[in-house]
Amino acid sequence: MPKTTKESVKRSAKKRHKNDLQKYMLYLKRMQGLSNERPSSSDHLFALTPVP
Picture 1 (cartoon, helix red, strand yellow):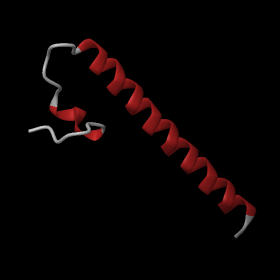
Picture 2: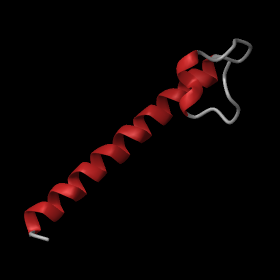
Picture 3: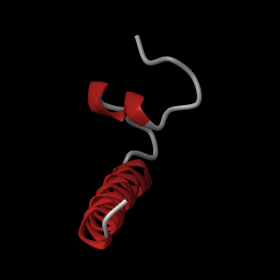
Picture 4: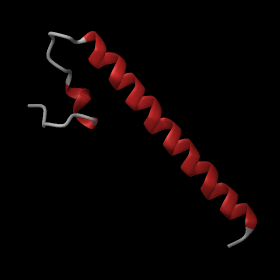
């Protein structure tokens, strides 16, 4: 594989990982603020049990 392709793959994997971490951090912040409230439908990405 040419060096430029390897670098491109590494860069895209790094961006994807960074994006996943950002989503997870937002999820944690939302969950902290929802002590007694029901989670929103967008929280299904990281929920342990299915959200109806």
